[in-house]
Length: 190
Length: 198
Image (tube, rainbow over all chains, first blue to last red; front, side, top):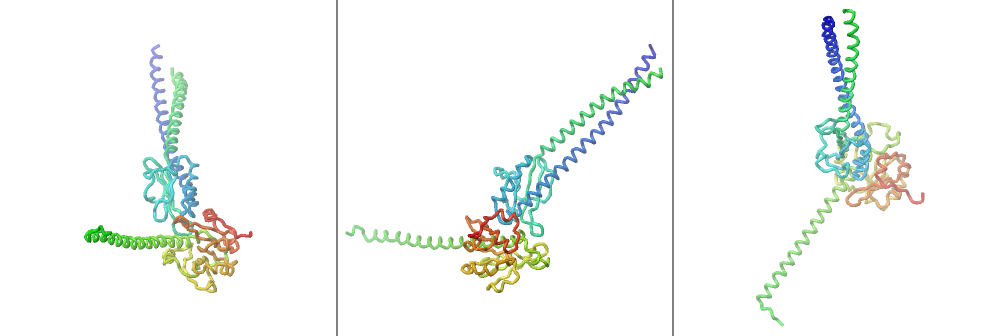
């Protein structure tokens, strides 16, 4: 009887140590996983926006070169295919607003001047500024794109959920496995 | 009947005279403003057309033979009176198409047109458009003009001004005849026109 009492704490201690180590390892792994998902997700989103920007800019060259606003609006309307794009605009070579998407977007949403070229994350949106030009010739204008961060938010949420889920399942498995294994260690001792 | 006293008559005459003077000055002023206004619109239309002329170079492919020397200047010619008021020279300054500098040349006679890539046929040559186009047939020159029915008559691009916008009419068959390839981006902006009888 007394021997039983003595090795109970040992069993508990072993289980506790195993669980502690497992939790730490799993937490670090999950944290690394989530971080990687978020970072890679952001890069992928920027890359997609950049591809979209380059395609639209390439199609817009003639409408800017020959001051055809109707055609410019039509080209921008193709952005309907990407529901995360909340606003877009084409600016002429002097930086004046030439065409906007969607037609009803209020003035405050679009910048007065397009700003520096490139794709970046801002507080509440992802924005892109792409030069519009035919290869070998002077710049004809600028394309501005604004995307919401809903896709990123969803990616963060789902990777957190997956990370947490994997951690919980692994910890449960670790608990039951450690209980079984530690018996094999402590029983021969008795 | 002379009911008016001399004093009242004088008073009645003065306002009439003032009204006449005011009307005259207003008339002159309005005429001046209209003239200046018309000039301002005219200036920006010429400027727009000048920019279009040099932008065409980005959307047209000339046959490889003529573009053999990648450094040779791309020549924009004006046949007849120059309506651009210096805007074309200003627009062209420092511009290049790949490595080729853009230059402006002015021609008085059709025979002077030797190496030319884009030729603007001025209003002053309106009556001779048909013979000019006939003489330039099959030459790799992008012919542009404001002349009426220019595209139907075989010209490649016509400037049409409507509601203070400059639109384009293009005759793709004429472009093909001149061995020029026009970018689809340019064609979709324009009203495409064919010569009658085709």
